[in-house]
Length: 476
Image 1 (cartoon, rainbow, N blue to C red):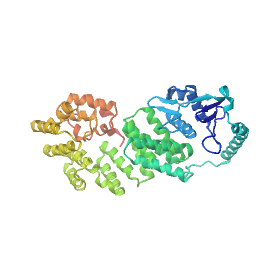
Image 2: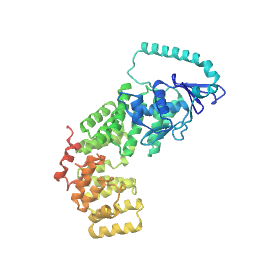
Image 3: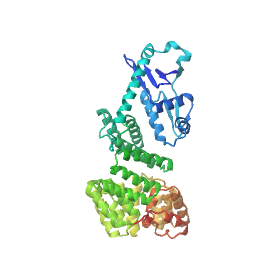
Image 4: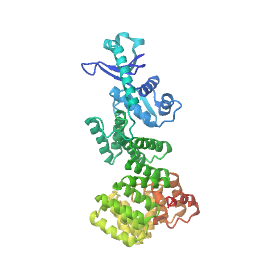
């Protein structure tokens, strides 16, 4: 059957796409088996929303596959048709549902034989013969080729390398839109260079950032990440960054602490000079209450990355150890470097509070509130709350009056509400919010056993199960 999609002619049996209007010369492309079947599925429901589940069931029947294969196949179709995901002419993404074929569709053979380009009929048999020869040569090549245990070292063209590097650059930016663009770039790269191991890691990294930003931790999405990372390791086994991301997933998403520990150690074994591994492992060890080892890896991190000198992680470790003299020395260093930074104020506020210096802690609170553009009336209210009841009054105001949901150094709800409630003296309410945070696997709860903030409430029997799932129980 010959179908016309806008200006493209599609042979539904061979997957051949033909367009005479893109240039003076005829342009012919061909869809592989999987994207062709997916396009046929969309044609079947032309003009209607097609769910991802429907497409997976019809194109990959009786197979367990992740949604990655779906997005890759959609990208292949879009690339062949010259479609743009942001301004689609052919396939429109329906967020949270799936996709819809929006192009005009004509069954040429059933409606108008005269629309078939003559060149398409003339070249049809020649093209089929050439495709057969090409397929035969590829089959012979792969049969004779010695299997390789490593990935292709470089992308095939300079333009492909530039496109890939653009994706890596976009991942360094701190906004969701850039990460989504990077995700699309890496999917395109996989289509053109399916044996290039690093791109599977970068795609997983982009998806991990988006999942973390949107607080998505379901098993299905985690499986997608693991499939991509395992594929990368299959192509190139000795990748420290891949093991680091696997460790972060196991730690912060799955709460599988023994597995996370083994992945962190494997990453360090493969590359002792990767700064981020030492930084992330130090955070993991801090949550486990292994303070001395956390300090060792923090020092290694700072030795490898000079910018780490200005990070408050050492102050936080001493704070968790309740060594407030050492924490104060670290605070003084941070204050010299960036006296009015948000990260300094939230670190100082917490440490001064744990030291029992409420006046100093409140000064830092006020600096935080001003940076968050609190209204003058709100600043007056919180000042009055402090004058009446000290920090307890401030936390009561944040919880019951302001109902603060922004990040002010106390994380985000429901955990932030639990922290407000603890200091406000509302322990029962704090327990409810802590259990809710545990149910949602809120990442910051992983430091429950070492954070002095929770010291007054850890004894509560309702929190027994929460304690049993703590990172502190990893094998020593």
